[in-house]
Amino acid sequence: MGKFIVTIDGPAGSGKSTIAKLLAKKDDFVHINSGAVYRALAYVLGENLGIEKLSNLNLELSLKEKSIRVFCDGDDITDRLQSEEIGRVASKIAQIGFVRDYVNKKVRDLAKNGKFVIDGRDCGTVIFPHANVKIFLVANLNERAKRRALETGEKFGDVLRIIKKRDKEDSERDIAPLVKPKEAYEVDTTSKSIEEVYKEVKCIIRRVYDNRNR
Image 1 (cartoon, rainbow, N blue to C red):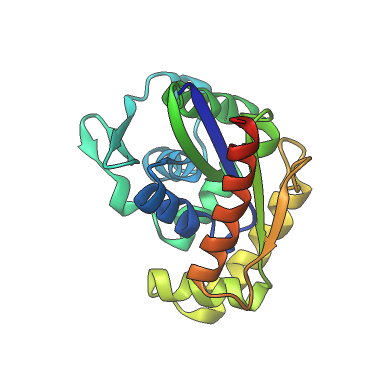
Image 2 (cartoon, helix red, strand yellow):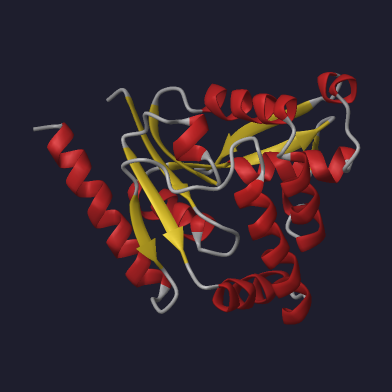
């Protein structure tokens, strides 16, 4: 079938990973979360990582059950990466050029032949600018903070403060800022259920996929 790439971009808490996981579960996509790689680097190396430390890091990505697992020195660290503090550090190091080059190569190397859905903040602008379908999810700040607090168990006020700061940093950074990709379909998830968003996104993908294969 060749390669078919769907990218889902958007700010923290907009629903990117949730929708990507549903596409993997229900529609036979392989889900690659680029943010997990940044979080892994933040978890292992912290804020002050250097190019030498990064080049010597034994970090491997593995596809398992239609999603990726992240291993460091053979240890699966995927389930340790969800705290907002790790997310804050990941957002900071994502502003470093050689870090982005490292992550982008890792992600591109995984998405070879098949159906892939990649979520993050610059998947449709930088990593896969020629993706078959580009989705841009948005939601208001309070809703995104509420979702993330429920997911992580952290206090709403703390999460709200961190996400607000990350929004500013992500949109103002010099390298690969958070923007809506060209030709992306924007979906506002604020007042919609997960199932409603999934159906809307699936409809967009199906329309593009059908047109491609006529």
